Length: 284
Image (cartoon, rainbow, N blue to C red; front, side, top):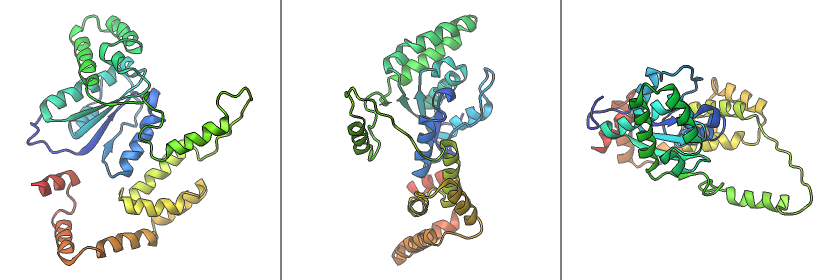
């Protein structure tokens, strides 16, 4: 591996997670939120089979500035996840890579000391890898070290950090009359999660993750049905959204003459280059 001073990053963030626990829930939403904020994020969509981690994933970790590790109940039961974690720690020590832990419905102390679900997972690993003590020790050391890094504990608050959720949760609590002996029935309505996610990805690709463009496109789609989303996004392939184009044009025309000249020079000279490479050049 190259040293941190010579390494060129391809991704901003690599997501390490246990698919069966969080792929279609927390991690999926985290990925979408990062993308919406213009953060280039690598998330493995393939179902993992076998015990050996793929070379593609190892390369993706090396090429990412930061890894977010979503520790969930069954994370340690996967030898694949543990190999990812060990690789992430290697990159932290060699490449200047950053690791950010998220403790999703697990106690950080259980991760650090391999207790609870993590202790049960290692009891099984010790049977399977009894002839490979070095691997077991490396996994345990990685869990202990990463768990000592200040991270986010989902148990602290169900709405902590979620913009606008406190008032919504308060309304729901009032509606449900928590503590009342009466029975309440709640119906949940909305677009199917996976379909919605796929449509959102199309919208992200169209706007290239630009916040202003996303805001305009999102405001025009937020009240529409799934069929209307599909129709509108299909139309964009041939006919650009005029409101999005206007926002982008207005943003460009709002620059003063000097800033506009700098912007056009940068766009001309670095067209086609990786945005991380351009960012590092411009920081010098």
